Length: 340
Ligand code: NAD
Ligand code: DAU
Image (cartoon, rainbow, N blue to C red; front, side, top):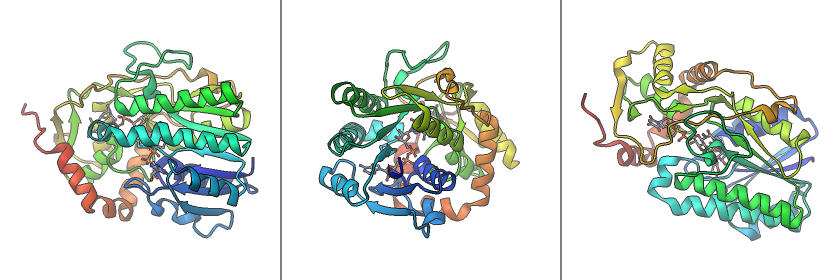
């Protein structure tokens, strides 16, 4: 593995992974292949722009001819697929985009991996495919119990990967990550949304009773988990990646406000997300057998993230002042306040 095609590499986790890979492996070359949807942003990759081992190509993973050309032109031997429609709330508004990118797009990339005989196809999956887990922890063997168009689409992508491994011998691996936080996350996701609202003394819209639980992991811990699977994982296998602990959303909101020295009165309860999964919780012992260990707790990951957003306002103010973001915010949040 030397010539990587990182699909979705201009997004949040993908761009962090690109930087991680180029830093850690001096002989690796990276092609970022990204459609640049509202979530893709070349500002995320500014610091690798002049790196000779890095190249960028704008393209859609559903476009088989363009994917084929990119694999050929850059002599790609490994695809790591981060490209996806990723926000659960948007999947309730426009499910078709999720089905196209997360299922059909994955199929197109798998076909390219098969026809070019690539050394590896790695799929970035999510813990949401296990559905809500009220007790215990999800292992990789657990049944899939998807409840949103996003998680159903991601499960479809994972199943297609296993099908290509089993039917055609494509050398596939899959990781299923919990909620990531860190630099360059689009401020529709809860931690950057709450942090940037708090910095502007705006309300933090918390869904329902705020007692839902998520495993907030630091994005670089996730990158290290993907790296461990790429280099030491078994083909055809799935590996969970997370801290292995969880935090209530309301405690996450308190932590953000306390870190910034802002009042808790900024928290604004709003109507709940339809089909809101109450809790995700991962058993990460399988990944630990590869020598990987998460370095940050949920609280440490959130604090680091809050500080990055406080110090990098140039990055998110451009996004939040844009027309796309403003229209989305209005559509998603207007009139949902719950009076106490
Ligand atoms: P993101 O929304 O920040 O970035 C997605 C990227 O994919 C963007 O750059 C976008 O332009 C690109 N993209 C979208 N559709 C495309 C298409 N058709 N063709 C090419 N590029 C396209 O997402 P993220 O949070 O970085 O998530 C990356 C991956 O990790 C996704 O597969 C997601 O399901 C998975 N994941 C995310 C989290 C999380 O907490 N963010 C957790 C677990 C798994
Ligand atoms: O678990 C992994 C998944 O984590 C990834 O696969 C997804 O791509 C990623 O978006 C994320 O999904 P969530 O739905 O868990 O993340 P989100 O940041 O949207 O919400 C986190 C929690 O915060 C969830 O319980 C909903 C709640 N929330 C979210 C928003 C946007 C709020 O209370 N208010 C909000 O405004």
